[in-house]
Image (tube, rainbow over all chains, first blue to last red; front, side):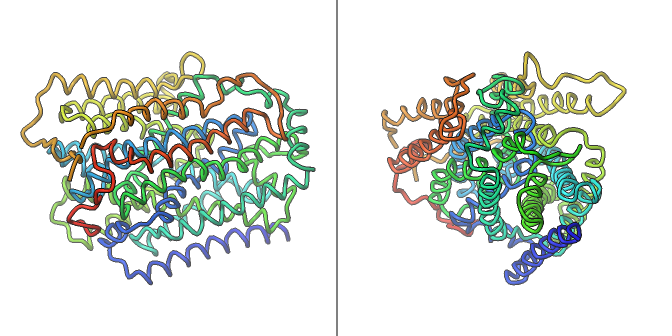
Length: 494
Length: 84
């Protein structure tokens, strides 16, 4: 009976979220083109929450508490630092600069901006291609998270593939039915809902176990090492490289990066920047502490399940636990849809139209985008069945892949002397090297290359340095091409 | 157009804000204060401090000067919000 209730709440909530998306779509009478134009009038609250919504992923709700459960609450520090502080600084350095440039020239994608600055369709397609490549493990991560969440919620009655398939079906439905419009305000509603419900869940569980002090006490009895800062998984190398690769990676995520172009005014970016550290903390603190406290609770976390649903099942009524999981899955679904939609705009604008078919009709382009999203999501679903790593590992792979784009982009934004050849070398070489490292772990016939060296330092961090060195070095020895125009990125004065 | 020399102080300030959001001085410390490990409180307070300083950065006008612009200048281009 409880099983039926839980599943009913989950599927019901997902259908509700889908209905909200549909209504929003029909009310807005959106055309394919309007998807971008409408977003250009995005205000502070919506911008803040659509950006926030990318945090509402399996990485935060499930991966984070799982890691805190396995290795200690230091994950809060890592995520808080990278997202609350480092990302905020990059929000200014990359985001505001991009907004100023985009405001002058009307760019809507990163590839378009760089392609225009350097007069290179190849660079434009390369940046879009690289972005799509790393979107793949990120979408897969959502499917893995959903699969594991339902295993935890139903005690294994729903198999892993069932949950993954459910969320995949809803992702595709959402995109095909709700169409090409990013319903930013559903992100906002879901962001507020999840923020409140995570706090309610934390208060509920903590009062059931006798308060914060008792929860921490029980945690320390079970795992005394959780009390002291650092140690175990959390080496200096791990903390520093994870924080840097993820923070830089987030700025290059298609959906986030596209938000840098679409804010209504610079004021919007300023206010979001100021509120960001506190908002991030409000989400991470209860979510990750619940994961860490769970080690002191008398709960059994089944193999391959997420810890958060198990804890909620133990201490809160079945309907509430199901509601949290459903809310998390719906939020994951809508944010990965925004990602898929941004990704599809990268594909149609930066690859399909300039490289493959310049004369495609708008209708054809819209269909190509939808079919592309469906195929992409299905392939990610198949890949998710192989479960190539933990949620954190898969997420980290995606973030690091994006992070390798960041330094060449910063170079282009701030250094006029950057050349096209410098950009292509700085983007392409580290990507090929990182891809070799990632694929060597998947392909059985080749020796696995190390992902970390010298006690937790991520090789992606080294490749980030390489990307900067190559961009600057190659730019210095090559001449700017005639098609390039550095003045395109000038923003000083008016 | 001229960037105030004092604005340069924001660069080390941001560097310190990022670097010490991780409570490095409390490495290995295991004291529990008010129900949570003390280093978690450091982090919570630090992020609060970040919001305060970020707000100061924006209000002082350094946000605009940092991009070589005049604070208070109209930020929208002639194209306005309907850029093509």
